[in-house]
Image 1 (cartoon, one colour):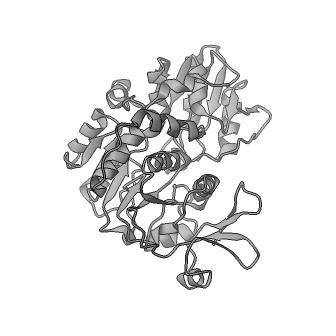
Image 2 (cartoon, rainbow, N blue to C red):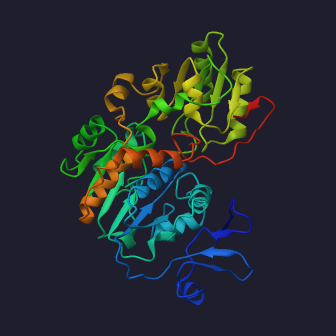
Length: 410
């Protein structure tokens, strides 16, 4: 069982649920208590029997966690609880054995999510053990924990979906295979949710064409992509460069001719300054070494706000990254592994109210009145409290780190 030293002085949290026996010993399993070494331990709080609707948010990467938080902020009349992404059964065993470190269920990204949740004083219920809940909101329907089956579920799209490769076709045909095998390309196809909140009409058409029930798919937009223009206001020091946002294709077991990709980036740059922003899930030493060898003189960022870099760049090159949405919305010269016409069709709607719209989907399922009258004020307040994201693909540790002499810091 791992523990996380949070940004709060003297506060440590367990990254795994406490055994029920220990939770009871620590005070009927409720709230926050001190461990044997004086550390603070958060754990499952027993049933409150409260009058407010009980809502559990299943978080994931930093991007996904922030989106869940923004939705939760719009449900102030509900009792909202949060947990990092998790599974049950054999999947949970694999996670605890560190066999899923490449995914949002791994310990690496659990630390990122937990640090964010604790830093914002949100209520933690690791693995939803205080259920049953009136509603569950998840950042991904690729894995549905067994202990939540039967609870009303709302799934929220995170960003761009992975391309449909041969593994997608195999999993699509044999639905008993895990949906996470081909990455995020099977998002929205579980059918176990009450509502799936899609980024755009294009994505609604996309998942419906692949078998999703059109009555369950709602176009809400997604909170971190519904106001891309705001990224123009930033303090990133460089301007007029060619930005390359890489993907974690090798870390997620996909083919990637990285050196060929870097050489292609050099050709596109045509002498302009190249800046690489690495995906936070990448093996940084390997990626930096390859860039230094194939594109000498390029700057490499292993952290920082990618959207701010995009707002200041002249051209954007991506692999399978959601950052292409940002580049195209801001009118940048874009190059991507995705077909750009498809990207335009799938572009998330820009109405600055995705969190409220998703919250209203939740409220409808809970039998609560929608939030409309104070929508603009609430959305503005939500955005003021939401921190800058490290990367639109999420998964980012909160602090930058430099790897080599040519590695820059935001």
